[in-house]
Amino acid sequence: MLLGVNIDHVATLRNARGGVEPDVIKAAEICEANGGTSITTHLREDRRHIKDEDVYTLIKTIKTKLNLEMAMADDIQKIAQEIKPYSICLVPEKRQEITTEGGLDVAGQKEKVTTFIKPLLDAGIIVSLFIDPDENQVRASAKTGAQFIEMHTGSYSEAYGKDNEEKEFLALKNAAKLAQSLGLKVNAGHGLNYENVHRMHEIDGLYELNIGHSIISRAVFTGLPEAVRKMAYLIK
Ligand code: PXP
Image 1: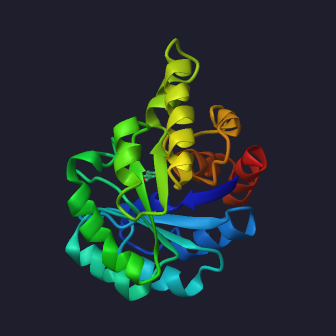
Image 2: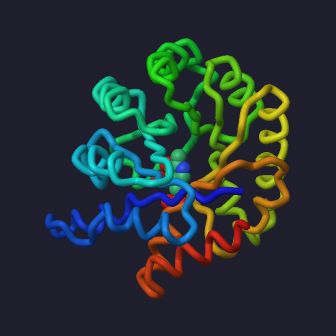
């Protein structure tokens, strides 16, 4: 299982002062040098953390793979077509949310998603759809042309250690199995941390985990190299 490190919060911290520290490009380098197999960034419509300049530089400096999270927005689609990241992950986006709160409703807008991702697929970019671990969403995703789904692990992460942990975990396990049977590859992420990540090993064939908040939070105390190394070790 691979580790994609989401570096958005390095940019959040930088933007708090409006300067250049901490350096997002340097952060990506450190993540790659310590076990991160790809770098994930979410270019949000309001550009609250990662900015256009960041992705234009990252695409030149990253040695592993850039995974660009994005909503169905035409201006960001254009940027993706221009820079050609290794992959994009299509996410829903609400301006007011603090983080991506739920999965993309692919079942409710299958044609729109299919049309939106086509030029990206035609450009050779791998497309992943960030969805809740729900049968209808998985089945709809399999019909769009996307090669991957990323399962939203937020509900599992919140349920970890509580009565509903098993229910939320089973939803992930079943969704992954169904997705793979329909020819999709499966990633997962959101809310995963150093305590709850171990159960991802119980899900057969998971390809990559995308993890941000817990790694950057730990890095405040231990430094980024250790925080990435420890997570890479845990998922290995
Ligand atoms: N995957 C996707 C699609 C996300 O939107 C996010 C949050 O930006 C993550 C993974 C990482 O979530 P977390 O920061 O909680 O680890």
